[in-house]
Length: 100
Image (tube, rainbow, N blue to C red; front, side, top):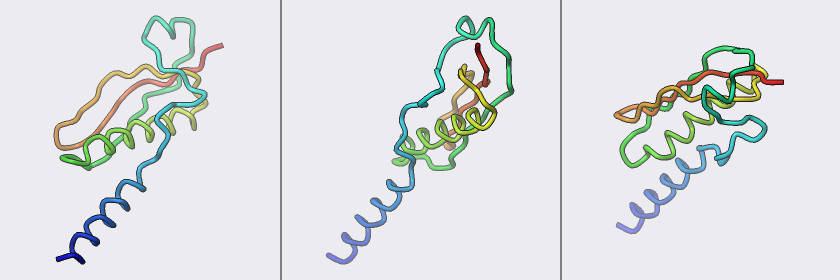
């Protein structure tokens, strides 16, 4: 029985370690439509993570970080989030902008 608990704890630790620790977008600012009125739209961004249930919070953070990484690759300075989904799949959608 003890081996099962140890294995379960190791599994949970491994799953938690796979999630990016970055909770902040860094050099990218999160804003609303007014905040990007004079900015160039670079494109839509999306983040996705299939984990739900007890892994919903880390799954959502990973989805958000994936979308932020996509915006960073586009050269964005700002993000406007448009939609999030957290039923059985963690997904987030938004738009990436470059502002002067």
